[in-house]
Length: 154
Image: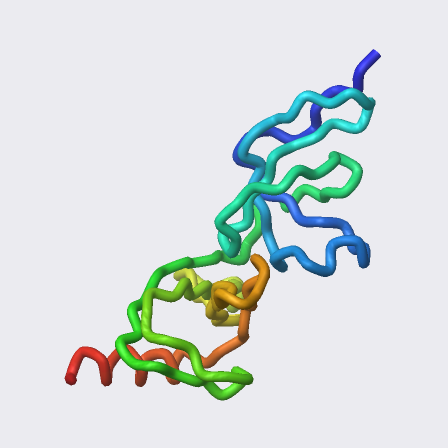
């Protein structure tokens, strides 16, 4: 008898804590395909918005993030026209398009929805000397605005 699938395509999941996953992207993954499994532990293809490939994960390695989650996540690409180094970066990065992720949470029980920014991160893809591991760096939206504004006025 096989175990019944508990996750569906489109569900948001996260890895359970384990040092086995030190080299994975942090945060939320989405179930993109079900994968046939030889064991009772179901397998899934999962994808992070911070990676350009899918991963395979066992059901026992994942935890469901409830769809009623009250945080909201916005992803956008910005173009930075000049080499840059933000406050928390170790080295300068070349011009290009970079993915920015902003996470917000509700500010309380108000008459109108109001959100507070929890974090803003920039995804730095792997350099040619790195082997497929990019970095996610916490940043300040004001720093990013200065970079994109200076590019629009040059």
